[in-house]
Amino acid sequence: MKKFILDANVLLHDPKALQVFDDNEVVIPVSVLDELDNAKTRPDERGRNARAVVRLLDKLRASGSLSEGVKLHESIIKVELNHRGNVPRGLSSDKTDNRIISTALGLKAECDCPVIVVSKDINLRVKCDALSIEAQDYVKDKITTDLESIYSGVKTVRVTPRTIDQLYDEGYLEGDPGYGKCYPNQFVILKSHNNQSGIARCVGSNRFEKFNPPQEIWDIRPRNVEQKCAMELLMDPNIKLVTLIGRAGAGKTLLAAAAALHHILNNSGTFQRALISRPIQPMGRDIGFLPGDLEDKLKPWMQPIYDNLEFLLGSDYQMLNEYKYNGLIQVEPLTYIRGRSIPKSFILLDEAQNLTAKEIKTVITRIGQDSKIVITGDIEQIDNPYVDFADNGLTHVVERFKDKAVAGHVTLRKGERSELATLASEIL
Image (cartoon, rainbow, N blue to C red; front, top):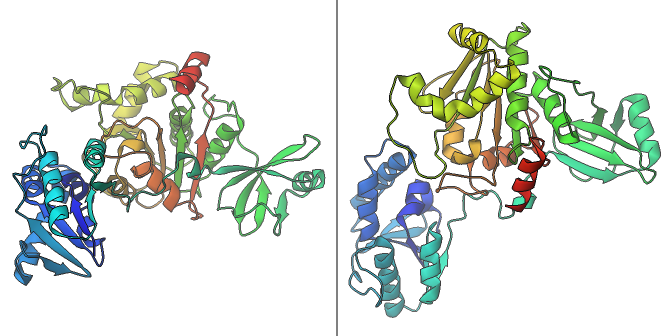
């Protein structure tokens, strides 16, 4: 049996973490309970998680003393009260991280079993390593451990010239072409040894169709293959969930906003409004209180969206205000989405890499009948300190929905904003 010491950030990130260490002992230092107590009044997800953990621990008290250990499924949950004073020289006992270290050292001294600290705090894991304490990140909810392995939605394969001719002569390819596993709505770039090329879209088991992407959306023309693939997904009303990942300047937000305007303002009848949103997550130090009404307070956070809309509308502010007044375009934060149902809407969720898996689940489960949602973000630029490229909400959606016919994804790898912006993304 191993002893796993859980840091507070693990429980605040995933309240079910107590239940995933089967056949082992899960130790919660009393200092971690203090952190949960401080967080339980917060109105956000971390506050809800803190309350969920506290309720579970309170329920376990009915089965025995937590200080002696209570069985939960196949593991034992124990609150550790000892070893609070055994902080190594040079470390302050006022810090929770250091008290967790002292707990780990105390448990190591009194038992022969492995003692492992589980924390999402990199610095704590480094400290543990320096003190010969085994430490791990909490990886249960990480969808991948490799940035390059995340599903891209586009793959390149080598084929014979005859295969490409068949695609364009008949409009489709059928059977097993030897491309390896392909997912619904995945794009396959076919290349032959004589420099012929073609693009097919997977529409079913071993069936690939030639696709004819729109030449433009709202006067926006695609500049590369990935943008063409993205436009195809954005304009297809049968695909209810589109995810776009790309570095700064790749065009993901602009393409999605252009598709929103096209669907809403061309009187197609498919959608009744465009609902555009993004999480309120500052880059760097928060500027604090903002004066004015709700729209005034939100404008700094939503300005990137307004920039794209104004560009698409030719800086016609009066027209944009008229669309907003008539309810055709709504720009809102995610703060008040819980409990809503959003039918007949084209929804754009920008900067989704700053959301947790639970937060993005809350958003998608709000989608009503005849709605379409486009989720965009750059998983290499995350401002939320509690998620990374492997466990943020956007990555979760891409990986969980890649085998669903209702969804499609494209990773935009090439920056198109400007030569300088592209260079900065690559070298900085």
